[in-house]
Length: 306
Ligand SMILES: NC(=O)c1ccc[n+]([C@@H]2O[C@H](COP(=O)([O-])OP(=O)(O)OC[C@H]3O[C@@H](n4cnc5c(N)ncnc54)[C@H](OP(=O)(O)O)[C@@H]3O)[C@@H](O)[C@H]2O)c1
Image (cartoon, rainbow, N blue to C red; front, side, top):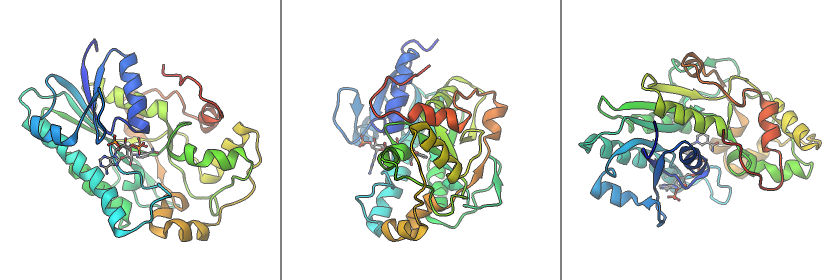
């Protein structure tokens, strides 16, 4: 019974964190955010450091991290450091609070990314694949996940998420307007893989990790339907009843965003959620057309949580 169980969410004010908070409340949990913002339901990172975990914390989840697809910010060494530190330091701060607590939570869930795997048109990755990449994001994920180490018996679950599809955040929020105006299109050749997961399934997977004592280690937080950028483009445009015939040249993204950051869109990975399926997790959105239908609406709509 979840009644009144407390969950501490690092970055709980963000896109994933807010949806997770709603799902937790709907399932009888309470939650507190660790954030840089003051608020009734919030504690700060320095409060966490000084006072440790709130009493009787049942689970800890980290969804904090400076958005790297913030197009208002140039890809400078300072910004890259912020992208890195906001993930590694928050992850370490929560791990340290867990390790120092007398009254240990059951589980620590960290959301990282499929950037752990080297972009490739031919490799297939499941959770046993090594993160061998030498690009910025692969190296970041290695350090980020290492920062999460917690002493047993606390279970550590690391969810390597694909692009999270939800109307009000992440990739869809950025792409909605051009696609709605009928000027969207594939990126580059469109042949690069696009690992994805619907927001509802990602937060349900986090809850699944909290509630199932046998779940631990790395999980690929992606839908089982493997698609390319071109397949996504067609599906999203169809769901909006718009054409999507104007491709975005790779060189333009490289120029505007910096090639190191643009690769998140211009390259991709074939990622399989092998362990997620073995654990028996049931997806609500296992097909890209179904997911695109749900996110293709102009006006706010109550999010279907259950
Ligand atoms: N969205 C996706 O498609 C996706 C895919 C794969 C992985 N992820 C990962 O999942 C995590 C959450 O993603 P999201 O889409 O929910 O991001 P988001 O909406 O940008 O929220 C991230 C949260 O991180 C906190 N944050 C931002 N900059 C920070 C900093 N410098 N120091 C400490 N905290 C900071 C913010 O909380 P406060 O402002 O309240 O402090 C914010 O609410 C990120 O680490 C991201 O890399 C996301």
